[in-house]
Length: 140
Image (cartoon, rainbow, N blue to C red; front, side, top):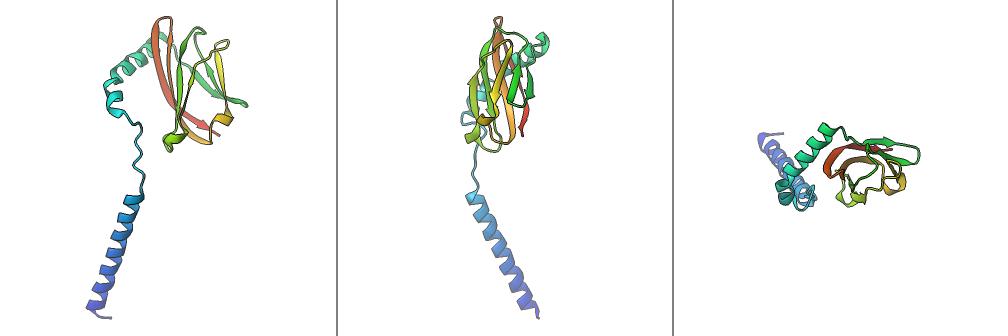
């Protein structure tokens, strides 16, 4: 084998690799975390204030995986708000529910989820104070 054939083989492998990279980059879905991230960025200070209220008032919600589903345990029974289950790997699997506390607890059955990692985002109001909490959740 001489230099000419070696250079030609290297060149063909390089061009094939670059073609494959272009194909992969064109077929990749550029899904954003949220469609209105500019507006959410502007409202982020209110979320910081709610997280501070949660920490200062000791109003953390306990999230447990039980045999029947995901159980939320609230520090107060009189509250209103929402819980969002955000799936980082697939935005079409995200869903949001209204908080419905029964004796300070709410159960979300496992049939509303698919197996994998979620980010739980709780936003609620209790005693005229607003609170926010988020954290990871793994559904077995």
